[in-house]
Length: 357
Image 1 (cartoon, rainbow, N blue to C red):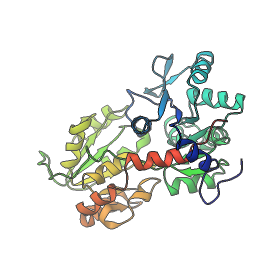
Image 2: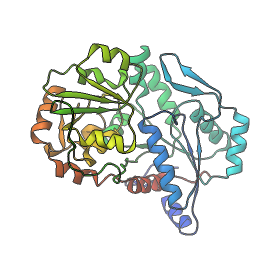
Image 3: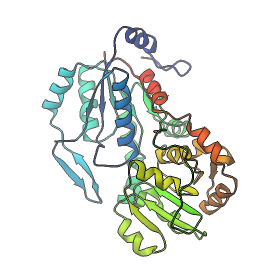
Image 4: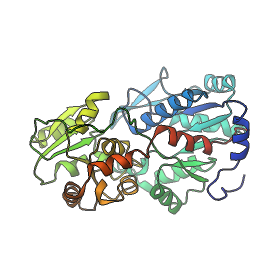
């Protein structure tokens, strides 16, 4: 196969010439799917929708209808148990031009093994820092999980990552697969500039959107001694505990669509305390609404919040909040978010794909 030359995946010329004649048949595989609410589900769903709008034929292999078991320490997440016979028949009947494996769970393993058994090429993407999650949630040593993650992605052509910092991290951790860039998008019709809505809470209003769970480090935000109101949108296993522990914070549960956009529009600042995300779609949703961001200098935010007008990244989250409130600029945030469209990132995704054979 060889390595990429100047960042261009092998087969890209053949891919483009073939697609000048017809659209592609693409399989996307994911263990994470609705009713889960997270960046992986959103990314695969929006990518599939965008590909279909462009005329491509897409089959999303996901856990709906399959036998599944809840993760003991995280019941919201269910691990499916696919039957390899029906799965193989489904793939062969679809007759794909390209196969992309999104997640490292049982479905991802099954499709990966299908491809390996037949000598088919496939791509993968790195969405979740499972070694860090399992370390915090179940005390599994990170080195054990990284052994598995390196194995899973070792035959990918390519392994796609959302940001330069994640690519550098995986290279440092000796991931041997070819690595290509696949950024993310935001719905600019939904998350749009609008006048800041009146808020019933004491300002400044500081918003968090995402899973309310320990691996997201939300307690780092809740523990901050800063003026104003902390608003939490989302749900998860830690919500009940933190609602009792932090009675001054406002917990709104899940919000979607215009209700979610309104939460951004009522906010003065978006706070993203995660140390384990690989991008953070909510960061660009906030920017698109004109809200600056405060975060740790972790993978994702450090690649996006690159100027004071967009917010601040600091090892001291309180200092990041202070600087982002002081220097954040609404117009600059909105302009930056215009770069992140689903059409642009789907084009990147297409250019990274390789023919299965």
